[in-house]
Image (cartoon, rainbow, N blue to C red; front, top):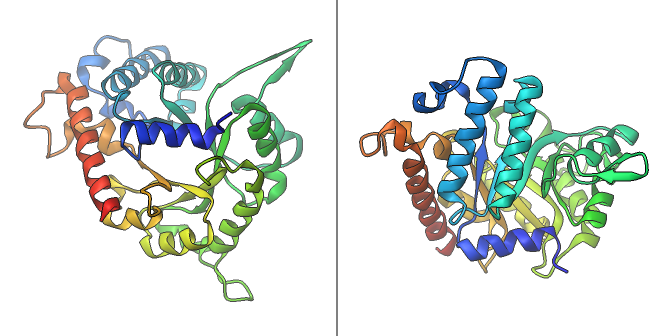
Length: 309
C-alpha cells in the first residue's frame, strides 16, 4: 500500500503541479459579495469562511494537489471557527485533495499523543474510536525533541499519515535559533534536518521519500540547497513563495533531478489573487475564483519552468 508521501507525490504528478494552496482566511479580505450574505457574528464569519474556502477549492481541485489550512485563522473565531476548519478539511478531501493541517504542535508525553489523536489518529470514546480532524499531514515544531514527535510518527505508521517538521522557516527572525552554530560548526537547522532523516527512516515510500519530512522556507535558497544535500529522503514543504518574497528560481534548489522533492505553499497570492495588480483589472470581485485559478496556473508554470531548468 502506498504511504502518505507517495499519495501526495502521485497527486503532484497527476496535476503536474508542486503547489499547495494555503487556506488562511482573513475576514477583512474575503470578498464583500460573500460577507454581505451573513451577519457579522462568530457564526456568520464562520459561514463566510466556509463559502469562501469551498469556492476556492471548487475552482482549483483539478489543478492543485493539496491545501494547507493554517489553524490559527480558524481558532481565532472559537468553536464556530473550528467548525469552519473541520468543514474545510472535509470538503477538500471529498474533492480528492491532500490536506496538510498547519498546526505546528510541539509538546511531550500524553499531550503530544492527545494532539496526534485529534489530527492523525483516533480518539477513544468508550469502546469505540473516532476520527476528529481527519487530515493527511500536520506540521510540527521539534524544539522539545523526539518526545514531541514520536506519538505522531506512531500514528503515521498506524493510520498512513504524514508530518512536516520545521527545519529552516521562512520568517525573517528564523536565524535567531535555527542558524546558531554547534560545537562542530554545524548550524542547528542542519542538525534538525539530519535528525528528521533518522526519525523518518522507516516511513520511506516507493519514491524514496519519507512521510516524516521537513519544512524549509523559500526565502533562504542557500540553506535550502544545503539541507537538500543532507536530507535526501525528506520531501520539503516550502513556504515563503509569493507574498513573502520567495522566487521560483530559488525554490528549484529543493528539488531532485526528477523534478520531485518539494511542494510549494502559496496562501495570500492564491486566496486573494483578485486583489493583486496582475488580476484585479481582469476580474471583478465576484469572480475571485477565476483570478485564483489563473494565478494557480501561472504559478504552476513558473515553478515547473524553474525546476526543469
